[in-house]
Image (tube, rainbow, N blue to C red):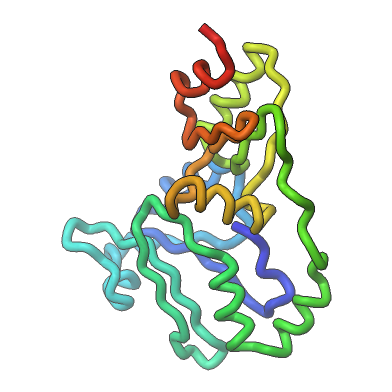
Length: 195
């Protein structure tokens, strides 16, 4: 998750899974930078209170922004396959706390570097299993590539969403202008002329 440091915020993750499952998931991602809470017992009670517990016993993917007074200021319930727009979240937080937003803006670089073009460019995240497989596959074939971490670049994340029709799928490849969404071996072989 991109940083919201400087915006006077605390990010918390919550899931209906039990603690060992959450620990395994966080380990699988290579660690996470925010607390992850278990809503396992009573099962889904917090999710139920927020109206996102499904009858099947799991929760919707949702984001809630709560201000310092405990007032719910923003709700986003979205498809599990879609990633939230972090710029929209930043805008909500800026509206809630304009002073912190001004301090945050002073800390940010004026402009992100342009996205790389030409050759093989792989847009990825550090925790993506398909990205790890793609790195290994490219290495086995001796193919040089440029890697762009979309969790660290708003511009890259927006570009991947545009290529994916709103879905932020990783890995996504730009091979000399040919866009391949996901680790699709057949499409990669065709684009790279590998039999």
